[in-house]
Length: 90
Image 1 (cartoon, helix red, strand yellow):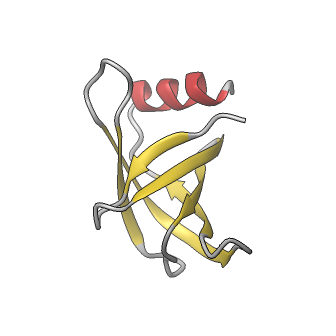
Image 2 (spheres, rainbow, N blue to C red):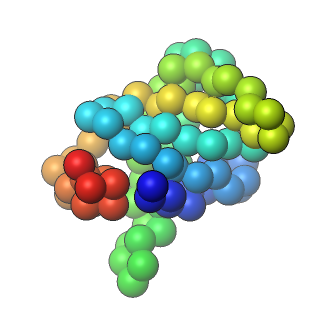
């Protein structure tokens, strides 16, 4: 399973663990309310940072204290979608 480190608006780090069309699954140190806007930054190796913007589909607490978060991405550019597809083998 691919994991991509992303940076949350607070500066905290999270992991993107799954990409399905328009929905990015994250493991985050904090929860996000359903519908809450979230902007992430990913840093591809040797590339410019990629901003990903979406709305939370809600959070579920994990046994380890982190949260599973579904993020519905919107306003994705073709190159952002292609990068996510390449990273997660979609």
